[in-house]
Image 1 (cartoon, one colour):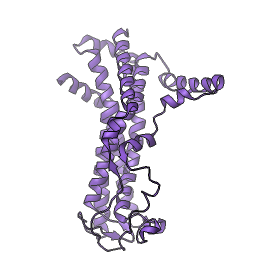
Image 2: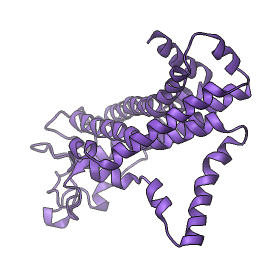
Image 3: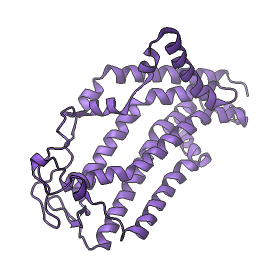
Image 4: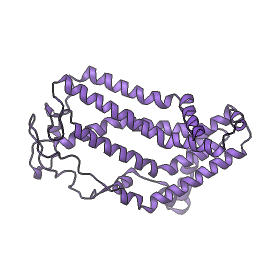
Length: 315
């Protein structure tokens, strides 16, 4: 376990961009908010959020606040996806390219330990790091805007307003964080086959690792379409985010569930019971999905292949 922890630290020492990038995004977002906070007005009331009746199809300000928090975290997750793809494709390939593989084979660290540490970084630690930095950033942004405009700090049964824009709300922030953490962990399981595939390519490719990663699936999809007029390969390899969200949350298929949520409070008014986004987490449905477990099995095969290739590698 100590060796595994040291390997994880080594990855972040050698790939500093993994932690510098999210911190840079957080700094840019915070500084931008400080400069333009006085000029920004989200105007929820103009897009169907706020004071209309339930029949009018409006979203309560409480739910709107959660959407703001989730939207603020989006750049961190986009960056995490890009960083994870680049890291997973480069991690094992770089060991052969710079001949550091000779050093790692000279010390008593098993190949499977090395490969699993790299998978842990690319598949788990990068997304969780994005979630942590995004959580701290949304907290800092929310408190900064609230204190700048004298909104106060709302608790579980009050939501402060400034010009129709949700102010700070502790319960809304915590709910948004819970949603984003749930989505992060579910996405780690759902997209694990992609991470395993990238790791396998990184262990196998001699050069042009990015071309070897993306060209074969594209060519196979095109050839199948031309030769057989079918899309079985594309359908089998696609794991859309919409499918994951349908598994994660129950009662998401109702057309009006996102709209008919009741009326929101008037600007500056407090609300009664807290009404956030109409999402009911359903981890049981996700864990019972055959597609999820099939993907995890394929991931295990990819990782096993990467370990076998590393054992046979000769720098």
